[in-house]
Length: 324
Image 1: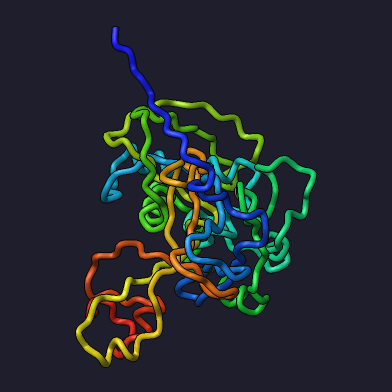
Image 2 (image 1 turned 30 degrees about the horizontal axis):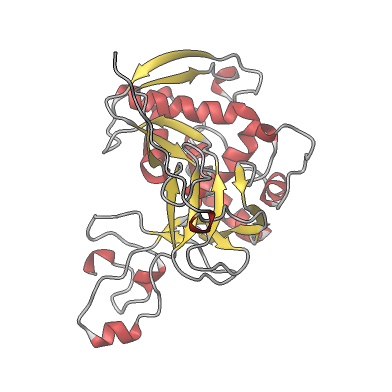
């Protein structure tokens, strides 16, 4: 028999960082029709301040390259369907409209989108999972609404509508989820290798799934000890390249963008003792002014791709990231 001893170190309170303030923290805006949404500071934020703390919207299996493994793709698709069925179809479709279009769901009208973009739920008395606004998964910090105008949204939605697949096959849906998780998911370490994935029946004629759908479950064993998590707000924070070191005085003098202004942590770690397992907490790397877009470095390693981040725009080489 083996005995496991857990050592818990209690740091003095003065060394522990406070959880994010339950005050307006971020609002959503439309960066461009190609980039899509972004998150912006709703007030001035101080360096090292924790901005918001959010529960995951979807959890699926993870592999390093998001290769088209059957169990991985099945897991991602089921996670998406579970999110739609959890009283949040309107919210999930609005937050990730390209994924919705590839699954056969057209973008919402402005009349349907506007209340979800608002700072508070239009239905304050319903259970948390059924609240219809983008801040519904926040644990700390508050969603401060949107700066998106009707004209901006309708132009963006028209572009999304061009990507609509009217009658997607199961393969279409799984491929869409694979591409989506590759670009939007966070790797989250876990201790249990087996992962229970909900199986939800499709709606009528492959249409939207209703919250009353009956779920069964099966266990899929992953070859990794990580999950892939999607967050309603955290996954909308855009990439910004870290400025490269340069011996050129011209480049240094001309550069005004300081690179990504945020970083994240998932689960309790370091001084962020308040973060719950699989939850994400966003922290300011430097002072951030109200209205400034929140960004972090995705760790891109590709060469020669077109990048619209502020760091790349701020160089004389323009948007061609591979030249940096």
